[in-house]
Length: 183
Image (cartoon, rainbow, N blue to C red; front, side):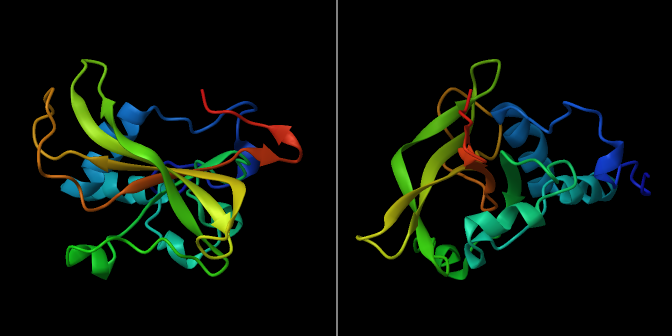
């Protein structure tokens, strides 16, 4: 069954093997940039159904898949969300990545995301979820990649203006005792 936007609503009409699996370039150049610009209302309605806006830190990671967009419903491996900027972050502070049962911890340094033309288009930060409170938390299998678009014309050197609406991708690397690895 299709809705007004031409999106299939039920999982029964999915083609076997079909997955929403966008590249990093597609996530930043299409989804994130169009969401930030917000110029086309019809396109924004579709993007909101595919990648919803959700205050993810109010939820534990294992609860998030039920809130994923229509393209990721039923996908045991990944789901995508836009995150609104937190009030503390808007005032120049750091975002709080605490949930009810744990926290998200950044691993490594942020890295640049490049377009197919070798231009810097965004930043990527990888995080791991820990149960408990720092510094005594227990590492879990939940991973998250946070993407931020670099505003303006992409160049080989990053612009100082970075988007204030991150897009995140969640992964659970162990699902039903099967191991899933990022490509």
